[in-house]
Image (cartoon, rainbow, N blue to C red; front, side):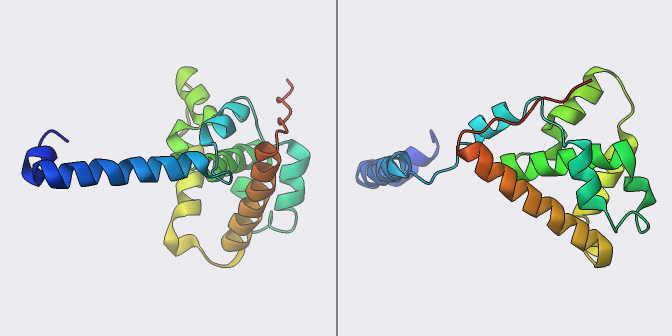
Length: 154
């Protein structure tokens, strides 16, 4: 901003500030604006319940044996968290926890990046990605209406 202001001159700068204030005011008045901080806070300790993962993954397990069980559930947890918070997956609580525990997250990260790779957006993986996105949408709606997800047990 220090470099932009002198280039704009006083008149354009005042107009710029006025427009920024108008945008900020509109955002403040927007009742449909998503509170991503609240979503991230609500999902700090959340992990996809095993029964939800089993239901989402049902019928696709033969195509993606690597995504079965706990590894797939954690992958789905990160993907849902990323969709809901619109944050980088590397900042998800699951991956943060693994880094803090000095645990190996390479295979989990590989699963996540394979899901995001455009060349992999076909057939069963695309169906799985759409199921996860739909799940994330439903959970986001619940969070936006004040529901808190259950903390994982164990």
